[in-house]
Image (cartoon, one colour):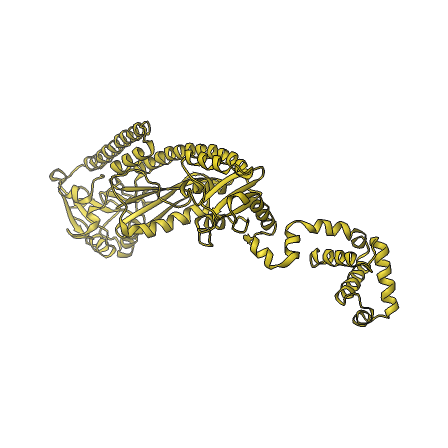
Length: 512
């Protein structure tokens, strides 16, 4: 640690005496001194940094020095962060000018008398030597700590060994969290304080939600907890939490940075394994869709997991960018929540099978999707041998999912009636093909034709009430319907044609 004013006052060779601006109990005497230097400039502050001990012979103070000028001098020193002022006596002045003593007392700037011609250089060298020794000690500590961390990384239990060594070197507790915000179970020596857990978990989830490299500090009791994400922007692998009683210095911060780099490598290797498992699960999905359920179930158990118990729901997510962390989090969830969630990739789809008993708006699966804003379609509950049907239902539901409606269940489509199911299955394309001649008309003609057909069909083809609602003659209505039949090439006197026209009109978006 750097030296302090109290240590200098206690050094007999310097013969220093505290005159004003503080007393023996003042905490300022215990603050570290980052430099010591001498200057007789009226304003030396442009060349000063905070945290130092300024020495002077007082050549710029005379018998006629005004109080305002001396107060301004002291104010400048205090404003620059100078810790104290040392005034030499027996050289220019036999004693410290009273106006300076009063100014230091008013400004709470410690004023020390440097008596008996004590060389300034001895004080300056003493402060510098302590600083150099402290820097050398921190450098040696840093090199030893970095070597210890590197050796720990070579052990079979590398991740746990790294965190345990970090704890030992910093003398504090550490914790590592995965991308889902769950604490990774690795061996450490010091447990996280129970009262810190809720605050830490909230800070970790907030850091992970940002999705980029970040560092945050939260105060928990007497500890300053540092939360730093692990990984790269868009591919965050987790968060490292360090709980210390004091802020980390430069050497300790460098050590934490090294641990984060090594943890990133370890977690990236874990991700590679998860990617391979995902590919294996994709193969299992094909077996399941082919009805080879027993073989797929036994294989899943050999991979360290098991299939969710029926009844299950099939979930389909489309358009997921490979570079996004959502897929990685789903892989992690499939490993952590085996027996509840099964995740596989199939072409450009991500297919998940979740236990219907555990599936809810508060499930871990849906929390992950909600955090990423990922739309998903869910089938109705099914048995495993109905998986192809479940996949078809999930795809229909996924077609209706959007940023405004993240989760769509197949049962919800049924509540919307047959039109809802037709829309989900992509029937709008067929409707547009059937109505293509009508949609090609100029806007005014198209709107009149659609209005005529909608009103006429709404009255079950009855001419008089339809003509009355439209405000036209019955014969005019007959002529319009005849023109529509000719345009579309259908006979609207037949129920199938009327039904097809009604359905097609209702499948179009409202603007049509």
